Length: 342
Image 1 (cartoon, rainbow, N blue to C red):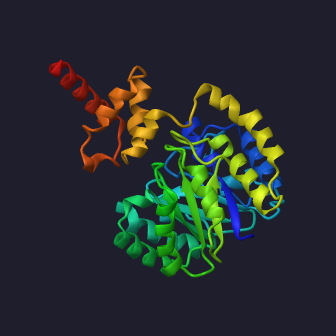
Image 2: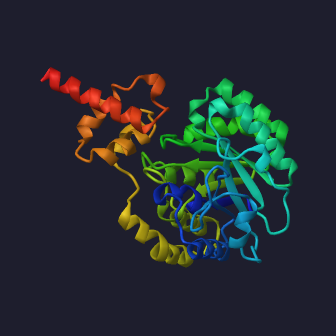
């Protein structure tokens, strides 16, 4: 692996748009072409042992289920799957064998740290490259993140990602958390960055990371056409082109554009993602983007001005905790209050 690397998560993060519904042949073709394009890491989906598997999805019920979708020749690509501590358990771990995914990425929130680290420990023991992904990195104070990083360092993971779940981290934020990881992790551990585009900062921050003065290997998450929840992610085609321009030709842009044309644009025409002023407001005020997504799913008539006022009624302790019934309930309360004030 080179110093700077890319990780395509279209089939995993893009699943938030499609409900993880991709035809089996599409899954195979995307993986195959990403490998051919010289993508460094490919995240092929979630392993969700709670949900019944019925095919044509990137939510797999077992680790070994993914084998059928992987080509014999992976070139230099590292194949990953993600697990959520509420959907994948210690009993679900299968010992790594030839043909399996190379690594597993463990994702978790602050209140799930103990559970997640135990799962991560066992995944590494089973022979997988261990990737750690604490969600909403900026939700941790410096002291909290330092303590977490010390616990993670004891596992000696393959990689740890800084995660901009709500799309408002600026490059200085990345550097702040990077320094903590850089001081505590083994030098062999890769540090990654996963971004969302609520404030159109993903590409800017990624460029800064590619110019970062460090000896450590770095990996940047991206997805085809930025496909992902809400405002979406960093575009694979954009960051790959930037890399090619400044670090030498490596990634095959033609293959990315073919994949976008064949498989991603048809999804986009049915359900769009990307920057919007509503998601800008969630990022600006440091609220979960689903306050916008859930509300607009049911009330497309909501104006930007109304939404800005609505966010101010949400208690601070709930700004990162978002459930659809809660959002809709608070919206009804907001409307009644507006009516009474008129």
